[in-house]
Image (cartoon, rainbow, N blue to C red; front, side):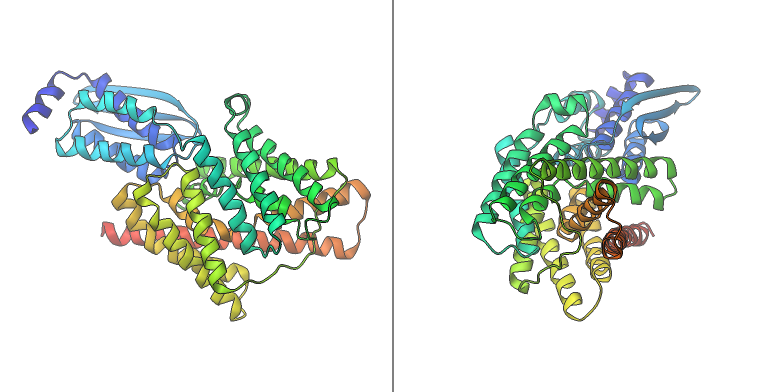
Length: 420
């Protein structure tokens, strides 16, 4: 086994080995692996191939500096980290382990990487079913009361999922698929409102948009900032903000088409613990499908997602704020899933976000956007409207920061303890 590996390396050039490392790193980078784990995996593979390398990740490219004795090489490849495909990441990480253990030669790894890069995402029918299930589960968490409203949410989310899978849209612009899906949700939500099938919460409109929120990119961005990779972290967060802006524009545009607005000051509804936990598990399962996860890892985000939401429900019932509850839930998720992500070679940002997706304050962000549009279009600057806009924005920011802080701190802590 090891002899075959050594014989193979003896006939492999520096350029070929460096290309193997860079191709592996690129597949990890563009499919949702955290920057820290991507760099560690590239170094692990480089040592197995007899190279000394430095991987420099940026938004839009990866640069690899490789050395083998007196020979040196610098290679750059395009790499936009806008995708999430847990199956590809897991496969690449297993491949790297196989090369490092001598079970796989470098030549065989090259052809294996080609196969991994062509691994399809979740099938369209499964993706559509997950979108419908996730949107319906989130509507339950936010207090939907009528079967007719749930049915419209399912139809709207399913239609949006089909549109998101249209190749021409994503090739034209990465922001077009979420914009179009949100526009559909806005039109359906406006129709439901006009026909008295939706309450002032506008759940028919906002819940299909909740499944579009790019939380995994937010988490990866926060992990980069925590590691002082300011340029890459800021780029990830800016991309996430642009996606949220596209979703908000699509949602509000669809509502406006039928002259319907999204209220900014409607109080939420509470639901029983058992229903809250069950819906959170369904939402976690849906996002795991979105991220093209291997089915044998599905139980982890579902189980931790249910536990996290149960903790949040308990915190809220004891009088704690939403941000405090989200922080504790995210901290728990991070402590439980960091070793799991390492063991199963799963992108932490993807599995972590899938577990806490039901905590995301997307509704508050959409309401804040609606309030800002009302200010600009009607000139209505009443104190109540301003107070509601500010309250929604601050609460949403606190929850997102609390979730990110909980996940990042727990992951960094577990990584430090494991490495010690």
